Length: 61
Image (cartoon, rainbow, N blue to C red; front, side, top):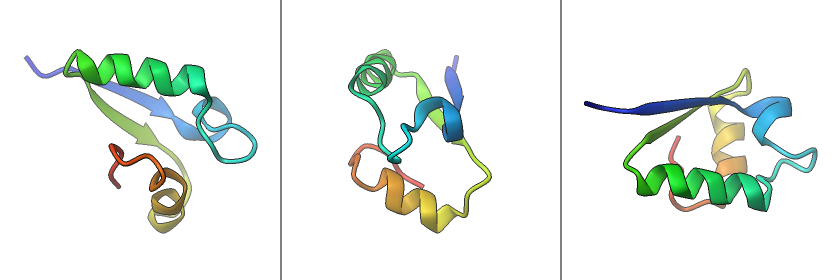
């Protein structure tokens, strides 16, 4: 069975400076270790999200 976790980005996961906090990164890493697919919801343009999330090598837009 495929498992999926979906998260809102703006005002939820993203810090005001458009970074993910250390606790958030740790939690997301634990989910990935359990083979849970992560997906992110936002109203931002895909190119903007690519710029924001591009610093995290394991995230793809």
